[in-house]
Length: 133
Image 1 (cartoon, helix red, strand yellow):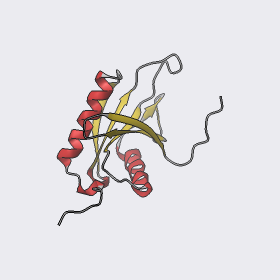
Image 2: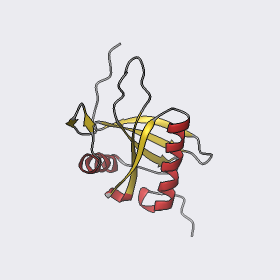
Image 3: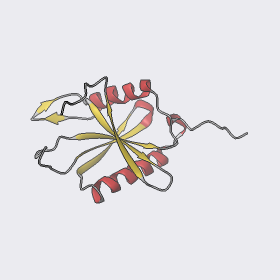
């Protein structure tokens, strides 16, 4: 009997997660000029995450390393799962800023649709006060 529910993270296979990571890596590298993209496996539900550097800009001449989480448009992902991703990433993925270890305060969410279009959103670990213009 077919299910009408969206697949959860645990129902995605490693092959599907690898495909999502490859689509996001390709898009960031070839479309957005990111560098040093590396894939990491988090034991939390066997998730794949990426780390890399966006291109330098006038506002950020030395870009900060960024955590990227590839997801399928069809996935559901709860706040509890996000907390687990941030906890696991802090423990397993080395993050250095000016030669100082620090935790990941945010991640770029790369949502891949069925036609391989990728849309990006920023997720924060907790509530973040909006920037003042």
